Every structure is written in C-alpha cells, then in structure tokens.
Length: 93
Image 1 (tube, rainbow, N blue to C red):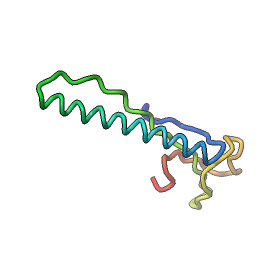
Image 2: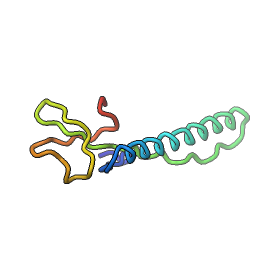
Image 3: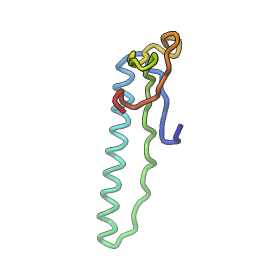
C-alpha cells in the first residue's frame, strides 16, 4: 500500500460518499494552494507551504474468480466466502 492511500471498510454507502467527499474537498484546497503559490512565484514572492496530499480512500471490492461481486459493505466479516478482495478507489480503477 502506498503512503498516500487509506484502506476503509465502509458500513454503508454513506460512509463511501463521505470519505470521497472529504478527499475531494482536501484535493480542492490543495489545488487552490498550488495556484496561489504559482501567483506568488510570478510576483517574485516566497511560496507558502503546501498542505500534504490527502490519502486516497480505498474500498474493498469482492471478486470470485473472474466474476465481480461488488463492494463489500458491513465490514470485513461481510466478505463472501472464497472471494478475493481488491482495494480500489472506484470499481472501474
């Protein structure tokens, strides 16, 4: 696992939505800081410190052989028997 990733076992889809929204908000704030630093550099000013890149939330997706079963909700105990867990940000990653 990369250091900029965060593995989460969501209980509901609301947990997934919340984690993705928090990640998106943190990325927007960081992008705004990068933009302000570009303007500061153009004006010859010293750039400000950037906030760290937020960890990307990863969610468990279950596969049985080559068949996609779906996102695992309800914690690690809800994993189907014999299923392989793949950690992804989106199902189509």
